[in-house]
Structures are given as structure tokens and as C-alpha cells.
Image (cartoon, rainbow over all chains, first blue to last red; front, side):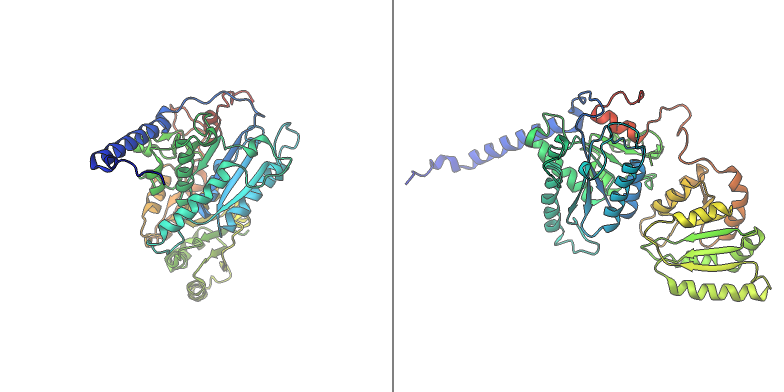
Length: 254
Length: 196
């Protein structure tokens, strides 16, 4: 039987010191991964394996997201992962429709990565259903968080012919709210915090949050939560420029 | 020649006041005055309110002998979008009256249709009102309200020729603008987005 550890380790002073050290190192780590310290991206050329994760919120959010992505270049963004909440058939159908339109459009342009091999649709459980009790919300949010790691680590529909991009972490994550977007971005932060598969050191999982066109004077709750942690925070009305200390306004985006 | 006014009340929250406002006597008079021949109402979750209001409106038209001039129809919510309806409005040089949900508003604006946006003030979150005011100020839409819809309907004729283009060609005159695609490219390192 191993001898018990020296009793001295259990003194309040020791625990306090341990806690302080952990807290300090966690804070330093967090500061290191947060956007103001992010290194500029390595230059890349169209055709380089590039995966983008797109979070489709629901009705209005989904529609706005598809407007944001209207000029999506399939030569550059070679694999698309669409994240949809369970039960949101509308968003799943719209994502497939978007990919179909990509496939049919501009057939002559070379190097466009379109078709079923170039996208996947990942379904995650809802963070909070409408009218769900606040007591059980933490549980369902944790389930959602856990499920979000799946589409972040790799494409959810891998086959032998899958591209390098599909098997790797995403290069870019795009969200425009609501709850599921926050949780997926939290999952991405956790990956960066522990540098899982080089999420931080390889400059993966960069994040863009676009505030809804409907927000004119104040940020949404998701926006307020995400403004300090995403790489780019975009607003669509001039009055919101600089909101949260760093909101960017480049004109109407939808 | 026919001329259509399409009214959409949104899919989720019932907006019965908008249905009632569109079919009020003052609004019906405004429609006739502007030469509208059809009103199509997407009543969403309130078919009962639509039925009774439409009945009352037809009675009113009959009393004035104008029931031949203005036809009132209703449709349920259609999840595939409002493409067909907006197309019809475009063809007949008509008008859209919409709740202030950003989905419908953005879709109507893509068609360059004259649009009256009516916020549902019964909703707790009042940013619908903010959006309507800001869009009106920018010249994209007419901000209407349920207690006073007729002036907005009359105003739509003038507005048709003066409405600002959406999305704006340049958001601000002096400032640099970027598209969302540009911002995506910057963020992941596609730096040559200008020479495609």
C-alpha cells in the first residue's frame, strides 16, 4: 500500500497557493488565446484545403446567414460544415438548397469544390427549447456543448475520398446567433485553450460573428456574450460601430 | 389592369392588429384611391381574425358599390418563402405591407418593392420598432403603424419612384466598405481578394 501523502499538503495555505497558481495560469492562457493577441493569418491561395463551419440559428437568423454567404467562393472554402439545431428542418433544407445552387451555378469555373463530398450537415441538440425551464437549461446546454465538438474536430460525414480539409479542424467559424452559436464558439475556445490538435498554434478555428441586421441600437444577448472572444465582430448599422469596444462596421452585409 | 398589395404578418407571433388595420375602412379607401385591385393577406396563425375582418371589409365595399374593384384573398404561411408573391407584386407594380421581421423585410427589398414596414408593438422586445425607424430614415421603406396605416398606403405611390436602393451601393460616402466575403477572406488569409 502506498503511503499517504504528507499531511502538510492539505494545509489551507497549500490549497490556496495551488488555486492561485491554477487561476493565474488559466488567466494567462485565456489572454493568450483571445483575439487581441491573435497572430495574423498565414497567406493562403485558393484551392488550399480550407474548412468553414457555419452555424445556422433558425428562421430569421438562417435567412440572414444565407444572405451573408451569397458570394461564397467554393474555390477558397473547399469544405463547408453546416451546423443545425435538432428539429430545425427549415435550416437543414435551406443549407442543402444553398449547396445545390453552388453545384449548379458557374459550372465552368475551375477548382470549385462542390457536391456532397464538399459539405456536411451536423445536427446538434438544442441548447434550450422554447419554454424550457431554466432549471434544466444547464443540462441541455452541456449536451449541446458536448455535441458541438464533433463538427469542430472534423467533418461529420467522412468517407475514404474525403479531403484533407474535411478531416481537419475548421479554419473559420461563422455565426450570427442565437444560443447554439454561443455554445459552439465556447467549444472552439476550449479547443484553443488546450490547443487540441493545434487549434491555437496552427491558427485554426478563427471566428466571425455578424450581428443581425435587425439590431440597430443595441447588441443582442449573443452579441454581448461573444464580443470579447470572437476574432471579428461585425455590425450592420453605423450606430453600433465600436459597441463592446470593438464592433466593426463595413456597411450592410446581408 | 391589376395591382396587388401583399400583406405578410409573420409566421410565429400572431399579428392580428395588422390584419385589422389593412382591412379597416380608411385603408380600403386608400387602396381604392391608389388603384389597387387585389389584396392578398398571409394571415399566419390568425385565420379566424382574417375571415371575420375580410367579411366585414367586403360588406363595406358592397355598401359603397366598389366590391368589383377590390378583391380580398388570404393565404396560409408557406415555409418555402414568399418568392411567388413578391414576383406578382413586382409584375403588377404593387405594394408589400410587412411585419418588421428582418427575414421578410430583406426578401422584399431584394425585389426592390415599395414596402411598408409595420412593427408589432405588442412584442416585448421592441427592436422591431428600431429597425423600422432606421430603415425609414435611410429611405429603404415606409414606417407604418397599425393605428394609422392609410397615410402610408397613399404615400407608397410617391415612394415607388424615390426609394433608396438596397443593399446600398456604398454604405457611407467617405468610408471604405467591405463585403462579408472580403471579411471572410481577410480573416483566414486569402489576401488577394481583389484580383480574382
